[in-house]
Length: 573
Ligand SMILES: Nc1nc2c(c(=O)[nH]1)N[C@H]1C(S)=C(S)[C@@H](COP(=O)(O)O)O[C@H]1N2
Ligand SMILES: [Mo]
Image 1 (cartoon, protein in one colour):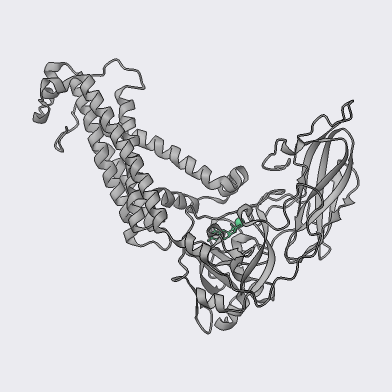
Image 2 (cartoon, rainbow, N blue to C red):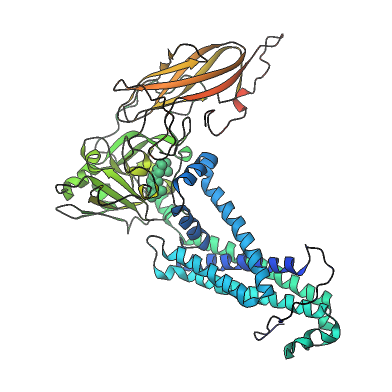
């Protein structure tokens, strides 16, 4: 057993003939990786006792997201879609793995440098934890404990490796040559095979302990969180003003088109929150302040007691590429924000409401939009249920006609009445626009881009939206043919999307299908291609399909076209 006084020998030990995989550098790297696992596992376990949101991985990832430039966010969403968080975790995992290997090797060569590196990493973790919104200094404790545990384990394992070096050196100038009394040990213990086994045993036991601590931390954290249970038990009040009945025929007649009403579990999710905030309704409070005559504080009970409205509204993300699926349509229940503003009485000169979530995200919404009579609300219900945790439980904003990044704050806790000139929202500070009215958009959903379809009658279909203006026309163009009006499904309201269908007499060969919409003001969707940054993608979607001739037996040659390769984006991107 090494003692705390054991020092790395000043001279580089002689290396035995070993392959790169079992050589000292590889073993040191392994020690580094196991130590990193200890850092994360101990922090996870400690975090289960102190806080749920401040574990190192979550804090590091959140900080990384906050420093993400717009092009990278755009790239991540275009490439990974709503799996962008999983992609981030994989990327972070690989980075930590490499860093841990390097630190292990450095610590083995020169302990003081390796230790300094570990402490530096610990400092970065702690800094990213304490700079999260709504975090107290105590939340740094799990990361601190994790770092210290990792450092001790690294020292312990590296010590075993040094011991191994000494036993591998010539027996008569091995340990004793370094003048370390504790190493002048008994002969049987100094055999290389024994010390190697000791290293691997220690590494294995440590790795198993780390896995157990991490799992224990997870389970404990889940057991201590009763927010999900409270959400499931929440009974929503009936609205004072129910949603108008949805007319028959809102669904496109083309099979395979998105459901007109998006089920909660299928609703796209976009946010900067790596771990879903867990907000307790008992302590939830909304503070309305800033340029107001009367500061207002609302409890969750105040919301339950208010005159609630219910409305179908389609949300859209500004990061949605042309033809993309970052949009959804739901029935929302909530308190009109104009009623809240009436209580607070904004003062002259105010033109914006900056909403803030419990995790520090902010959105800038024009004050006028929140007062002009549209169904902008503090929503507590989604499709007849309490908001799902990922969609903002217990309270979020829903504002018809604006992209989510400037309006749809989830886990909202603060409304500041202010001016665009005085305050910038989260994404505006990162290169996106300060305002975000939704652009008119039509997309093809059936068939999929690059699908193979049998010749003859082919049903096309999809969805179009222009929230607050409505959709009055969708047109389809095949190759260079004329633009032809599609059949529109029924319109529920101007703030919900509208579906379409079109019957195409398809001749064999490759074909391009284009689609475009006209909004309720008579304006045609622009064909000008624009990227999502800074204020939303535009342009007409174009897809390619291959029409296949029928075989001699009369059946289509390819029947599995619905499962054909489905690219993330359309052809022009
Ligand atoms: N707290 C918080 N609210 C947020 C965001 C966020 O990152 N954090 N993202 C916004 C964006 S960009 C969009 S498009 C919508 C998405 O809402 P959804 O996840 O319920 O679909 O939430 C908005 N509200
Ligand atoms: Mo978004």
